Image (cartoon, rainbow, N blue to C red; front, side, top):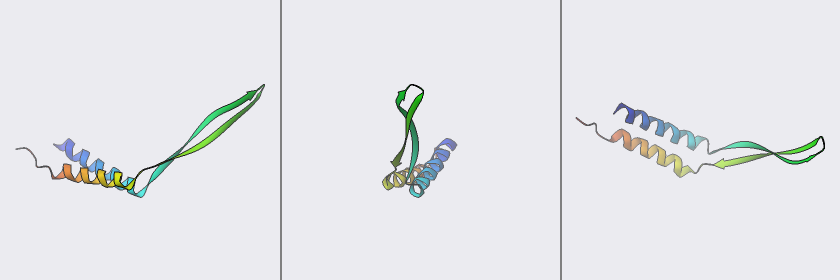
Length: 72
């Protein structure tokens, strides 16, 4: 049962953090041309947005896990 409480707290923390940080970005590098010793590469930055409903769903599911009664 302690594992369920830990999972609930992690879900709530993930939900809160996804509400504050609405997305993240990462950079990819790819080689586009190579002519002799000359090499041309391009760095692209991609943005991934996290919707607000995802954060609220994580918080709600964490709260539901906290409210489930313990087995006797």
